[in-house]
Image 1 (cartoon, protein in one colour):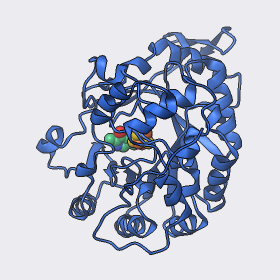
Image 2 (tube, rainbow, N blue to C red):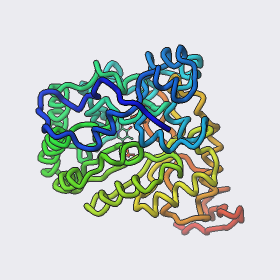
Image 3 (cartoon, rainbow, N blue to C red):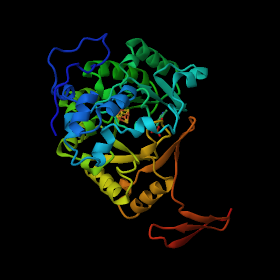
Length: 378
Ligand SMILES: *Cc1c(COP(=O)(O)O)cnc(C)c1O
Ligand code: SF4
């Protein structure tokens, strides 16, 4: 698959901070990404007018690296990155089903970049850019919108909030993709958060990023040695299909793991991409072999423009049933539904408990055998 060079340079981060003059390799690759609808329609042989309409509403960007993983039209990699007319023709869903928008938070007095849903941790959305715009993204309404890129003032407000809320011991840097920021900008934010958190017990910083999967070249030794200074720092990435486990992504994960950064991965359950137990088993085993611990499988959120990716919840149960017992426990993530309306993540399980009373618990194992476990008498 060939790509052409794009004229406009993707934004590199907060303009208030100067960037070094030498352009790193990953930025050169990012610049070669395809994001205009004409190029996309030509490359994938799809309608130019339809593509333009979709991209006006929901931006696209495909890194040449990710595009090179496409084997054929409509495959698992293709579906994740190439715009589909159903994004604008299917009106099912909500723009903000998880109630993350500032309007939804105003009553709580939380700054725009922070979501504080759980008692001891916050989501801090420090970037609106991603290397690749996943067509199923929960933040579809926001990502890629350059006008809405956070300003340094917004970031400062977020840091202030963390400082003022002593109950926060876990800060999850998210976006968009935080690794779209330059190392210097990223370090400035991480350092500020680190200085605040280090006064608190059992504090951690987490980075949520799809970069190891879509632009693994961004994971450089320089980035890793910077991150390493702010331990404990966890990195949670996002892989959805075994085809994404390549030499390059493996190398990116190795660099991070060798720097002492524990790695996790979240996967979104997507129709036509990974809604099959064997694919998921291969993905989870592949991740663990790359030292990445599968963390969550998400049921698709009710986001407008993504309904064509939704599967029945039972599909997730079937996948979990195939994983549990049949493969290493390390390969089994939690299956979660992020409750519409801001209820947060709810882990769901296929029923292992068939019956429970004062005397005993009746259990079902992975081979569908029934077992009894007697209760302690009180
Ligand atoms: C997912 C999420 C977190 C982190 O949740 P964990 O279950 O601890 O990984 C924090 N805040 C928000 C708003 C989230 O959506
Ligand atoms: S990388 Fe994450 S935030 Fe960015 S488009 Fe994909 S799912 Fe959305």
